[in-house]
Amino acid sequence: MGRTHSEIAIAELQKRVELCYKNKRKLIVYLQELKQKWVNREITYSEYEDIINTPRDGKTIQEWFDHYDAYIEDCEKRIKQQEKTIKKEKIRPVFLGFIFIF
Image 1 (cartoon, rainbow, N blue to C red):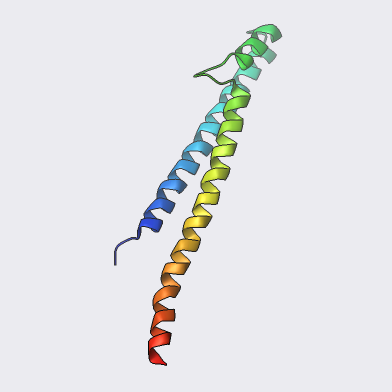
Image 2 (cartoon, rainbow, N blue to C red):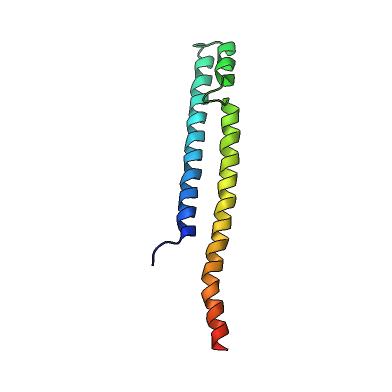
């Protein structure tokens, strides 16, 4: 039996969540490297702050973290909704079979 629409949707949502976590990890590594440059006096604290607060693709680093967190939360809610749909789809034939027996 093939995968249902809900199962496919869950798999896609899980991929999106993983991509968000991957992007957040990249941001963390970038911030750690940037901080290390400041600690090593390769950049000034002012430059460090400027880099952190300069928007990239329309968002600051903090806004990107907030965006990823909100998107992960939305995907997880949608995954739960799809899981409920799968449970309903599995219960429906059993319930109908039970009704026809009696």
